[in-house]
Image (cartoon, rainbow, N blue to C red):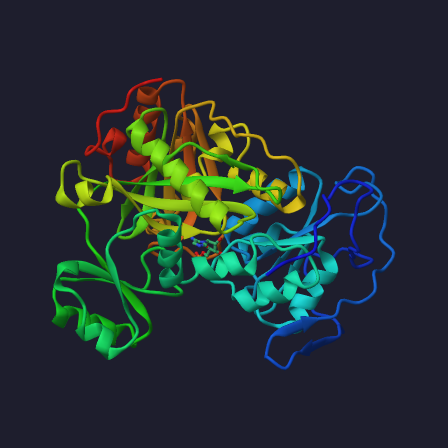
Length: 458
Ligand code: AIR
């Protein structure tokens, strides 16, 4: 979708933004005009701008400047924190009354993502809007984009929401992914090439953190798995011999400028990210360069604006698949900051959330610099099984940075927070991280992942 040029959201340069007379912690959906167009899309007519109080100490100066986010989970919360640090007001749309981002924002529009009155209220409050969850329906972003700058665009999010579209995009960019087959019909199911077994069947839509996936080793298992997945469109991906998983997070501005974080080495357990290690030499530099180049081409070809994460599989050296595919294949993209980039909050001079704010507001981007080796441990709900974890003991370790998301309920596999560990050397960082893990009951890992050449200190 083409949008009008967007002004930089700086003091004295404010588009037609609005904010209710009195800030309330929860903004209720008010009496706003909304209508549905003939194609079933959503049209929003925002009310006229009320007079807004001048707050010279905030971003916007004479006007209050508000950045909005669709989705109120932890990623929205960390975006809100970063935005507020720079003097923006924040507004969140999320159906959950106790959403982590809703709790810390100036406004929480508590409606469904497709609720027209809720979307109208969000646009009335915000100068620009982003998203923190790729499962936010693309039509909602399209409707918002008719009235306000939205980044990333609904088109880019729609591609990231659908594994089939995503893989087609990788193909267009010339970035290899695992061999796969699309399964939308019984005929396609029957025609699956047996070279794809053993494989993983994944729903094309609405999956994250290992949800909507099953391992299958035969056509019979695939048929059963598809039945289990209620015959929704799926892809079957060949299981490749993996040495490791890694990701690249970049930020791309409206002018096409791209900056990136260093490659993150990721360890998943039960389909959920467990540990991220980021330091010089965490993966061989030739693969790191290839991953960064691939991520940039994926973002450029989408004309992407915002923070993008691209996840990769590193293949076992010398395996036939590695020889055929070049050692590294792209797995998927996330059109938002990513769990594997949380270390940037404590180990880099700009975090991924700082860059999300900058891309949304049209502020300049500078290449982030990592100043310390870092290891991130995900704090999943399982750690709360026997009560509150021993934070005091963990925080007594040097270079530990605790981030808790304020979720009211801990359940197994649910991301409740993360612990960043920074240090002066890779070895010291690893030693502290292992101590913290032991205190928390997180299983240890091998520095650098074990299947890659050992890390080489900078
Ligand atoms: N999220 C988005 N895609 C993947 C993940 N993990 C984040 C977003 C979303 C939140 O996880 O911040 O709002 C949902 O977490 P939960 O624990 O409520 O399922």
